[in-house]
Length: 344
Picture 1 (cartoon, rainbow, N blue to C red):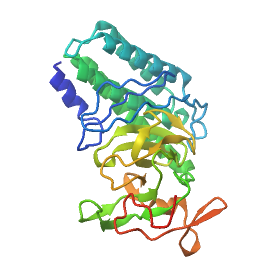
Picture 2 (picture 1 turned 120 degrees about the horizontal axis):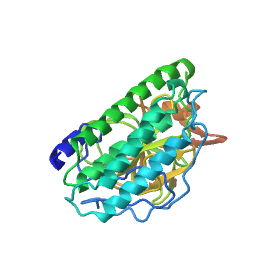
Picture 3 (picture 1 turned 90 degrees about the vertical axis):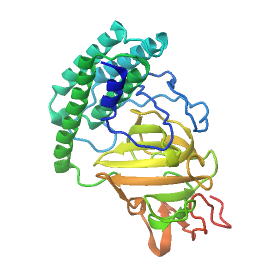
Picture 4 (picture 1 turned 60 degrees about the vertical axis):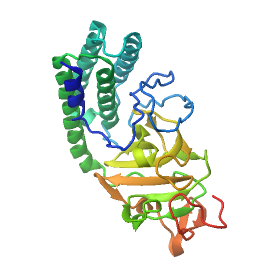
């Protein structure tokens, strides 16, 4: 199958449409540093990523089915697959046909996935499903970029398994509805807390027109650590147009959080996180008027006001454990501006 057709198939995979080139990162469960396949055309360099040991758990972090367990066999198969795929790509020139070794590599991981999908839905970890899906989508895309020809049967086989993983996730979610009634408890992603722009319609600080603000802005110092608000798995970590460097985390109960305008990424797609893990460093990448964190919370595909989950005290105070920090009025240009007289 031609490279053009392969890329057309990949276009059917879920993806974020951005105005700039994205920093594509494949899933990496190995302990070595990530390797970027394509340099950003317009994005500023994020600098070297601090490599930290990936977390491994017997049960999924956050809320999952009580009977669900992560699969060490699947994790090992994905790690081996990614390591071999990257090694083969390093040996080939752009436009070369896919080597037989990589075709066999795809066959091996497909067999591992088939074995994984044989387990009952009630024993399937949703994080395993996400890790497997992220791996298939990312690695197929990287192969399509490099190789001049991908066997049609191989591409169709991969797409079929992506579909099966999506179906399994739907099964798991239906079962979770019976046992999961509340969303995870969320913590503030940055501290101290100073909210400079709220959720809802506002005048865009750069474009000057009324637009929906799908999250909240929190004042931050350049390079300040940005923390995961709840346990989960990293769905995306890279460049996302006006959002700059962004991390998206999948939590339990069909909730995702997004952390935008980062100056540096500290996590990779597929990585398991606990509440409070560092996901990146605050910055002003993308369309921003200054250093700050833009934080979004999505439920069932709809943006929600993060303040409703993070918690609001009386008289406009923001409560963080035993500490209460008064919110301050937003400046004229809200996004990324520190309120006068306040130091975050």
